[in-house]
Figure 1 (cartoon, rainbow, N blue to C red):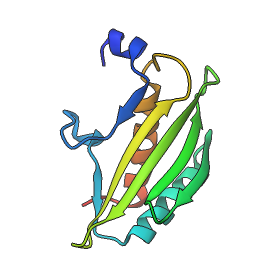
Figure 2 (figure 1 turned 90 degrees about the vertical axis):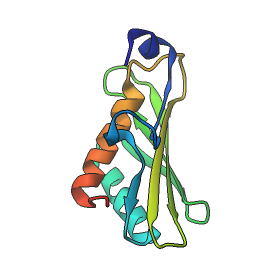
Figure 3 (figure 1 turned 90 degrees about the horizontal axis):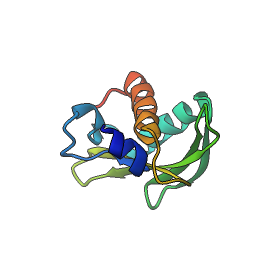
Length: 124
């Protein structure tokens, strides 16, 4: 991430075309409910994270993360959707509530979450 992005970008999203494969959406051969339960368990175990709400019908879990050094809060939306083929897809968006730049914090949020989730529930 360039210095310009650190100072002007306050959002990070998992995307299929991300040049870093780690930051691509996850796919699981598990039911949506099982993936959602694993994510909620992970969030409960991580420091500075808080589950705000889970809307099962939308497949959206809204959480917040408070940065360790500067007390800024980021909204993290986790979308968990099961397709007709039975494959559950997980995508993450982390966005700062304030400021124009995040100094890479939103990317670190996604990395922390996905690293813990991959250890608990390996993707396909």
